[in-house]
Length: 318
Image (cartoon, rainbow, N blue to C red):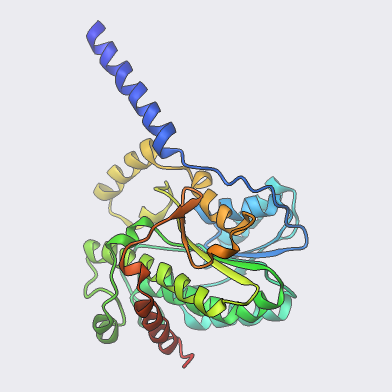
């Protein structure tokens, strides 16, 4: 019995050590206050997005939750107003799976908001299916919708002084690639709809986020707008909500034991949005609130430029 207790104690101690040294993550140390500033956070009704919006609201920002579900978005806005004490938190409808919805959102925002200081492209999913415009759902939402949204809001960001764009990517971008022939024939970066295809589509889309940020920084050089991509950490979010029960169960157990909370997962996003002195690092990639290297493919300026040009055509901008 004593030996069993010793093993259990050692295992528990090992887990605590692992958690606090590897799973808890770093913290955003910025003390910046945001009174008079406006932020848009996509996918802000849950998970990392909601925690990001809450922190920005606590700092005094006007925060717009750009979400697909009106019910969930309005509930999240209510929660954030109550917890932050900031009444300037509101929901606006945005369905990134519809290019028309993206355009409608941008048109409304440009008519109603005199400034935009932070654009946090946070929303992401890993699910089969097609967008309203026929693109693969993961590619369409995680990359293409955010690409169009960013370009439509660029003039407002530029006119608002020192502003930032933050694209939430993933360390899984290292497994991704961009096959333009598949993109041309399938309007997607994968050729099927299986669970494996969904996973790879997610990896590919996260590479697109990094490449988009890199090319965006090149095009913004000399302006007042800077941009950053990031890995939020391994976070217990609702990303796996579409998995079947036998996939969801181990995902849930692993999440509870080893993953960051959404609040912890928001820290690198907040670092990129708020940390003073990051302007010279525009276009770069962060993890654990620090500058990190990306994959070789993610450093390919030619690939980044071609993805931009293809994305423009797909969005009807060229």
